[in-house]
Image 1: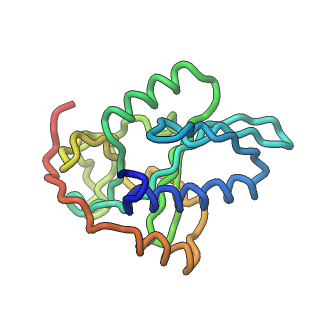
Image 2: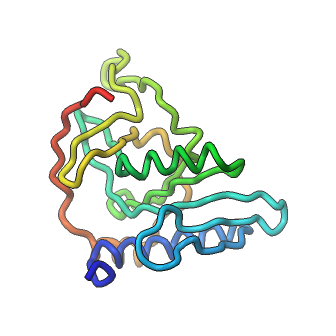
Length: 180
């Protein structure tokens, strides 16, 4: 059963960390999870300012693609996020957690629009947009360069240990750029 899997427990543990972070920032979370698989983890309202946001937490470790750290989501989730983003005036935050980097990082979906990122190694533009598609072992992924995200909060030793204990080996990706 999925709820007993390490992936589910890792996701749930990271969701608690993200929820606590936003609570400390003054947000009141309302769970969008009605049990089982769900698109978004929370709808949140800042108790002081009234700002409303959507938040989805992902406990994924970035991968190395051609010398770049990248992270991403399933293509179907990307399309769901696009639809929600078009229909809602509230910012949609995607928050990733990486126990190896010891950091939770995130960005609003609007700020993850395609762009060409610089090649830090030689100064030339890389002809790989971010986001881009990557064929993984679980289907198509929409990937972003790690530098597109803001660091939100460091993960404590205890948080890293929890996430590490629930981590599987890194997925076996076939990092071939596909035309989107």
